[in-house]
Amino acid sequence: MVRFQRRWASKRYKGKRRRYPIYSVNFPTELNEKVEAKRQKDYTLNWTEQETDREEVITLTFTRTKQQPL
Image (cartoon, rainbow, N blue to C red):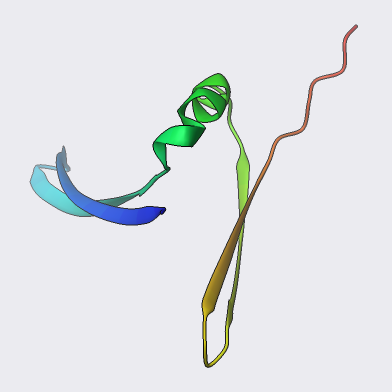
């Protein structure tokens, strides 16, 4: 099961304390090795959602353009 979580962070900006949410996705432990191998790379995220009477489907697509060797 994958779960979305929200936590609050705060930073000082222009003399005031700003509070904002940070959202994260927790993956199942079976995927730990696969996720760890991709952890330090930057990806573009594409979010697609679809809802029916019986289910709600959210598709997250992570895309990264590989650099070509010289």
